Amino acid sequence: MIENNIVVQNLKKTYGDFCLNNINMKVPRGCIIGFIGENGAGKTTTIKSILGLVEKESGEIEIFGKKLKESSREEREKIGVVFDENHIPENLNALECGKVMGKIYQNWEKNLYRDYLERFSLPLKKEIKEYSRGMKMKLNIAIALSHKTKVLILDEATSGLDPIVREEVLDLFQEFIQEEEHSILMSSHITSDLEKIADYIIYIHKGQIQFCMQKDELLYNYGILKCSKEEFIKIDKKNVIGSRENAYGVEALVIKNNELDKYMIDKVTLENLMLFYGKGER
Picture 1 (cartoon, rainbow, N blue to C red):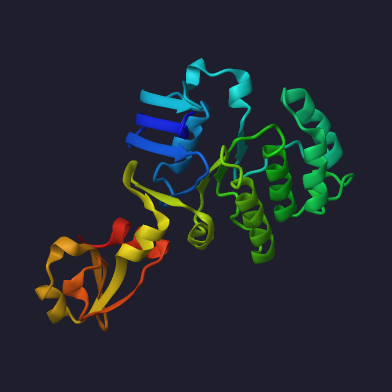
Picture 2: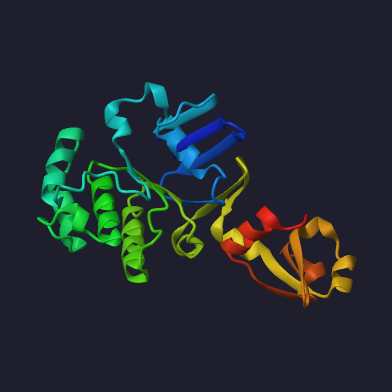
């Protein structure tokens, strides 16, 4: 039995002066992977490469233990996708949309789709152009989960949603992952969402993976050090990932150890990690 639903090895893709370089990542069964990075870091290009929507220059992508190009239509249909933009014809209503999807997907689950529409309280006969952003996103998620889906890939799917809708959607993702064969790869700028539900975090910066770690280990082992400039000079920099000066002294992202126990160290967030890895003075 395969351990990883998706494996990416040495992926490379160049657009002008941007290069997605030597990307290696795995999406294990039974896990939620949080995929973070600033705009233009390469998240969407990586996702589109996994889906075969852009042609890679080199490297290998496997889904469900097979090379992407050798996978069957049935296997590719086991991946449900939600982008931050709505790609559904907006003159349709939810019921008409379900009929269209039934002709597109071999394994369309009509009753499951209707269950999601009911759960999300989506109007069945209102045209999609009259939906709010949150309603459109919930419709996209309902579609993505209704064709015998084993892997859910989300690219900024919770952006722009109000807190109540986001909580509802996150609960659904956690339910989906209870099935041990399922996986989620979730790209999001709302790092607090990933702190709630992700098992692993992958951080990409300027087209390169900076780290892939268990979320709990990441948040436990790193911290935000606050000290004076004079104190910072004396600290061994091997434990410093990035730093910045402010009116009160220095803030630094550090790997916690006994040497630093005498200083004030705050809990780290994924947003802190992105900030200091991406912009801190190393």
